[in-house]
Length: 420
Ligand code: ATP
Ligand code: MG
Image (cartoon, rainbow, N blue to C red; front, side):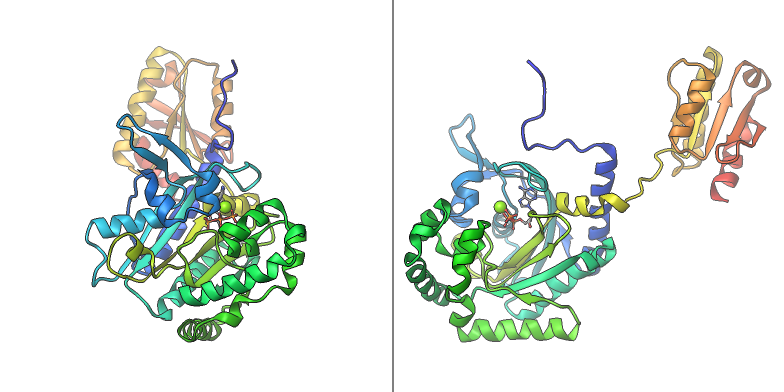
């Protein structure tokens, strides 16, 4: 039997992982600039947390969860998303009532989906969740912060914002009725999934990726026409701030998000450069989520960024950094010992210097090829002669320039050449 990775579970090779790391470091700095604090969420929660709060009739709960019984017979699920876990954490640790919180987290999520470019069964998200703020200024802050993230990554020109307001529960339910009435008229022409959703989660049909269904929706009633007064004032406030900060957006009444807990503001950041999997960030407001957890009512909102999709956007222009500054080659047993000791001495004296020792036998020529391939700036060469004279041959790999340096002087010498 061939050993291979589970379908949809990606291996990340060093260059890819470097891009992911770069994204996380960049976003972390932006989050810090807004006072967001990192939390760590378990990868596994009780299944009913998701089924109840993400919603029984959502794609995630209906067909995408990795669910299993543990040895106790408890039903557990690998987290498909972070919002409800974060709300649970905040509530369980007493971080929610009469408080304002801004949290973020990063890590893998798991969904049993059809794997394709930009869609995996294990994927990475950075998520942001805020609690205790009801007004639209925080909705605006979230969007301005995400814009700053795209700027920091250099992709703000390739990504645009689509916004909608879902209103409150009453206006959504009035709209749902109008939508169902309209769709019943064209029911036979809907795709199978949408026909099923007509009974279970009709709003989700707006989000269908089937073209014929999208065409049928052209004349459907618009959620925007059903908005309650408070939601519409909230939405206007948000739009005014965005206008003032010159953040363009498109109001798209079809944006509903795939999860049940949203109300009022919902949004997606979308790129045209990734084909069908173009949404790189989605989020919105979820003012009734905490109450559904069994707590008092606390407003909340947040978004999640798909790191795999961002990494695909950055891939073409990303320059990997060298993983070594200094490469040490040696010939002969005494020289090999000496190489290992010297490497430790350099690391003691120059904490940030990255030293790679050629830890196996080999012809000097092959070792020097490895040194070149490592992109190190300096090679140190130690042979029998060098050992007997307590010296090292230092070679600057860019120019080929070579000289002998007394072994105890090597760190000082490296400091000079590496900082010049
Ligand atoms: P989609 O409509 O693409 O299925 P979604 O509405 O299910 O997205 P969310 O649950 O809002 O997505 O997740 C937020 C972001 O996480 C998405 O915008 C996307 O960038 C990323 N994402 C979601 N599912 C996957 C996946 N299976 N593989 C890679 N990235 C994903
Ligand atoms: Mg999905």
